Length: 179
Image (tube, rainbow, N blue to C red; front, side, top):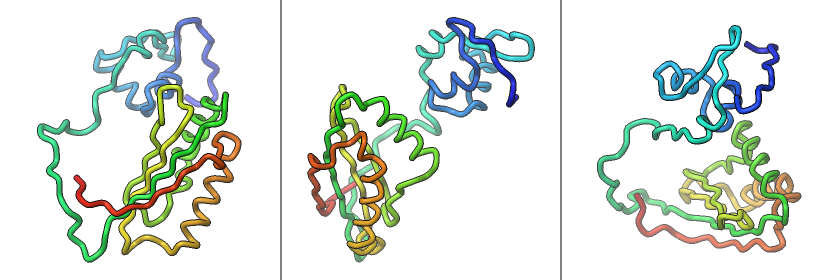
């Protein structure tokens, strides 16, 4: 119901706010409510949820849960798997802004580093004063060095106000085994 103002009731959140808190879609929150996993109250034609209940709620893992861990294996192509690891400091006091920027990057599908088979941005510590960026490439699909540098420069430029790139340490290595 776009365009409807939801009254700001202390201690309650809308479906959309609950979805943002939980990191799921609005539709998924409705499913949790309809299945009885999350309590909700109707105010007119709008559902509201107790904020404390939403914050305590733990959505289950999506898909099937694994019954056994995948086995180690070697890369069986004529190529290699390469990893690029970047460790960089978060600028003081920019933790919230960093998280907001990463959410926008995710939502808009930006900075995908074409040629990667996996990408991770990892908290360096609980205080989020450092990040580890891990890019996994197939060398047969990895773009040429100038293209990779251009992609990285665009990412660095967008994140320059929250990450101190002068502190960045870069390392590229070959994966020996993986899952």
